[in-house]
Amino acid sequence: MTSHPVILAFRSSVRCWRHRALLRVALEASDVRCRRRYSTHIRGGVSGMEEILSRVVAPLPSYETRDKSPPPPETNSLEFMYFYKSLDKEDKLCFLTKLSQDFGVDHKSVSELALKLLDTQLRDLATILLAEDRLRYTLTPRYKQLFSHISRVEGGVKFLVDLRADVLEIISSKASDSPHIRDLNGALKSLLSEWFSVGLLRLERITWQSPCEILQKISQYEAVHPVRNWTDLKRRVGPYRRCYAFTHAAMPGEPLVVLHVALTEDISDNIQSIVREFATLDSDEDVNKINSAVFYSISSTQAGLQGVELGNVLIKRVVRELQVSERGLQVFIYNKQSHFHIRRLTEFILAQLQLLELELSLRI
Image (cartoon, rainbow, N blue to C red):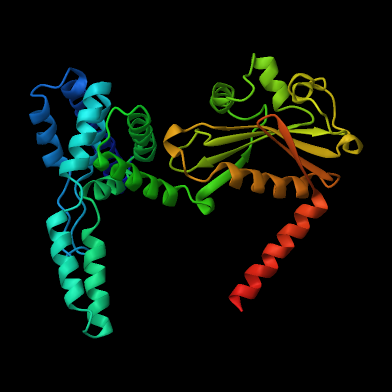
């Protein structure tokens, strides 16, 4: 006979399972309703945009309560994301213009605090610093706070990267010359530069054993020397070849910047010979035939990360990686605009030592 505690535990687990199932169904239903709501063209035009922006873009908390105010509900971020994704190109321009103009910095408050800061110049240092901090806080656009909250939901960082790609396209195509749009771009770039700093990036070597989705994206994003087929791709990650990429925890499965390297015995004067000539797929590498590393292709995969330093950082990280894994390397060659720039390994190490000495002298 089953004991009473076991029966209670079983009933509890069943109730927990039912609760989770109902919660999952409710969330899926909410997601469907939200998508259906914005799947058709916007009703009400600008007024509809104003309505949703007023609802999801929370006011900036007062200076005194900035650390005590609870964050807005996650549904605000999700609603903003779903709504924006439902817009066509023309409506996105209108929406971003409205967001940047009406939900940015409170210029009246900034002017008042700037005058107060001038009045405090003859006061004590603590009063001056407090006035400066108040002014600095008031200079934060309301939409920047929204972006910070969006980054915390699943898929939020990728959404913001794509959002900035749209903003950059608006600026480059001159669809709008609004200074507010440029300020919006600056705020996004500042946030993305923090989130994609060097310490938060992960260096991954891509091989034929990497997930199929990653390999497909490596092929898709290659902008310098297009990949012809799967065999071509297999060779580019095979013997005497290296492929590295930066990834980020907030964008799993998405290579941010990709670097292709060829390990060669001699320095070639023709980049096509490196791209087209490969060892057989089943051949083993002979370390005695590896003398040089040719960085023959680097591709940025995310238009929204333009201006965020990734490519040069990746090259430096890969050089260090190869110095450890391939002891026989003596020459590093970086192909840039079809010209070879050669720096011998000894020169590279000396340059690094000089930088280290400089850093130590500055600390002292």
